[in-house]
Image (tube, rainbow, N blue to C red; front, side):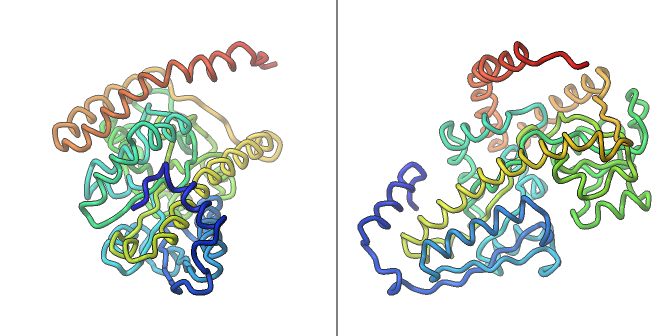
Length: 358
């Protein structure tokens, strides 16, 4: 497999000097399964852009058909379908599969963890890609960053959370490590496919849910049922995931491998930019169009309890999985070094230059 740092120069060199004939290349037809429905932007946009780039770079010889969850009927079965070779590729999130391997969890995000720029720096320059390969390759899978949502909001709640007692017995959709944290605080946690979220909230199957952020949440209509919108703590840099069957990847010509990896990388960062834009626009419109929404921050005692539960669960997971410990310790060490720069470059800049609210 071509190392990431050599990928773009390699691909550009091939295209520039014409060392291969596109017309003479093998015609490849792949299938990709998504966890998402066909209209869930920007998640779907990233996948469609990736497939379009691959097709264009290959002169139409390498085509990837995209199957949304409404077609393959298994939103959380993407991992197994790609591993089995039913699909050559998938687009999902690794923390959905923490039950298979807890080490997958921090490759998506961790509560109180890195921001998106910090996490991208860790993936590509801090050893993250190598650790992701160590986690997935024994399963016959290759894994690549699949697009970042940035800092996610803490969720939609039917009732206001004023203290820990308001969490006791609450039914909430929240995946990943954050779900485990909330379970420790008395919340009844469930994971529900994206297409069933609104109905579950409307029918009272759940009392609260978290999804992503303003740009994606408003379109789902959650504000019509649960007006309290809480700020985030649990997913500061949620990285989606491209999964690739390793045997199928190895069967590709080397230039097709390069095209695919380059397209995945570019589409992933483009998704981060698109989602940031969507949320910024939606946030500006929120007060005018949806005056019923009340933005809240969790009380200090709740945040403190979250942090305590998070630390205890991390300690347990490190004991359970040496690879989880290795990945998280790499992230913690990297964050300790990079956070000083984040504070100087972003936090201090914003703190010093933000105008006070009226």
